Length: 341
Image (tube, rainbow, N blue to C red; front, side):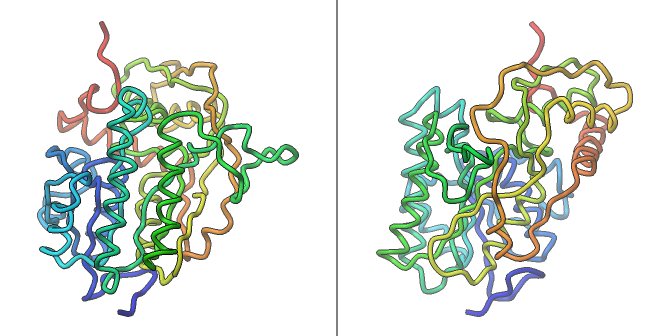
């Protein structure tokens, strides 16, 4: 089955996105719909608000929705066969706070669920494109960066500082074994701090919530300071589609590039994008426990990997939130902004 690494839909492609109702899932589904590709949105939840925030009603109507749980292998396999899926983009996962609150559940979803996805693809490998999944730079500790350059090299050994990082590291091992023993090709993409409309959960969701708070005129403190590497959710969605359409063989994993920014500069960029927000947004002094300078040259093998300028990404996110506010849909609790009291 021949494939184009990028561009429009091919007649033999049928995509399934796990975790499609989450932030990255929504942006990935939008990318596929706008490319004219058939896509099945697979998720255990039933609230499409993140999709609806960034897609038109007509675009949403073109998506097939399948309710299911990646921890149930048999039901997941049924969906793959019912829709004749050829391309799986696996984004379903529990974020850091949820893994910390319930480590067994985190392991069930993030590790066992990922094994199930690989197993299902292995049983249909002859028709499948490379399985794409999200890893995370969050599996590294700050001390894993090179001592001289202070940059995290792509071959660095990982020493996770939380359960979430342990689970993400385990998934890369799963990918390696499924290639060695089952010839399942895969591409893992490791983001760090993803931002954009729909990013309302997780340890690094604060910078996005701050944009929503600025639009609402609500004071907000980002829970960390220092600097980090930002990736615009739209770019990540486009990148995982590029990976799914690649012809790579083997178990590959790539750090995702982006734009390194100090949180103080991030706040200045919000104030520039949202007039009247000056003084509303602050940040805590504690820095993230992950490296912020990330080597990412190898991902260029996928093709033209997009990196949106910071001002453009923040501005586009603020525009989405302004539209949602006009429509009465910018509900603070739904966008990571705690309700006072």
